[in-house]
Figure 1 (cartoon, rainbow, N blue to C red):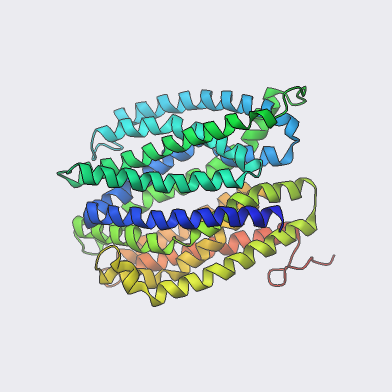
Figure 2: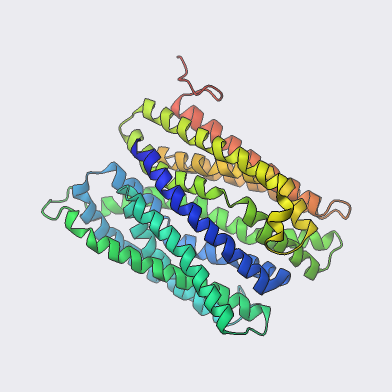
Length: 441
């Protein structure tokens, strides 16, 4: 078994266990927060992920790509300068975020402690990103897999202890506790990464005289980080806007804001939680695929690139199709694990294209990053969201359509994104869209 497949299955095995724990996490949140509280939590979460995206500057991807493309003799030198650069960027972003959250009413509708928790989150995410990128580039997939499982397990433990120990009087306080548990979990992951990194320092070459200057290292990192951050930033911005867009459309269709928030909570807190459960395999492929594609691309190994594409598409077909079939057939008992809701059953069954094409888009995005086509991925994402958001607003705001139109918009965006990614990858590596054979010139 090659390194890519081995890394993928190691990550997938740990991620599967982690997703089972995540399922329990969302069940606890659904029961403790209720429909409206879940809607509030799901509305705040994208804002936190947006801040995390900017704070990390996508170092996990740029460092992983650098490590995979360069001799290990350069790794110690690179990590030193990457850490210094990350510290500099973290201080700047921390100050800017502090000004924004305390000067503008970004999170003023929620508990005042939320601002402070978000600020604490910034340095934790930044340094965790550097170490995650190092282990990914070194193909230390076991370390990444363990960290992913620890994240879910610690979050579950913290939520269980918080909600069993304290009685929160409002949905706002319950939501704050849930966000606090999320940040605490990331702190535990950072500690784990530090211990793992320092125990591996003895295998990083010390006596080598570096050939790359600090300026060149920063340039190489930013050449990947900036466009990838742009891509992730756009996704995070879109995800932050999406809750308000959906609720606005539903209000225009005739719902009250409270009912619209409940429907959004059911859509994202229940249907999306179940639908994205199998995506752990897609994210495992993504992590293993970036260094594999980067290494094959730098060696100009077209046969290896074609083989990697075939493998990731076949693996996605293998788990994706059965997953959406199971979700469609067993939608009722699956949604009842959270709370009884006929709407959740309907949403889960009718969002199967959204979930299935999402499974394919994730590894294809990793492929684009490995090929150095991040800008193409960004353009694809922009177009897909323009179409999706346009349909959500135009169709979802119609009284006779409502949530049906929102589901249609979500499905259309996912299908378009996957097709754009797939066509671009096939053209870039010279294969046909169906048979994946090299084109004859």
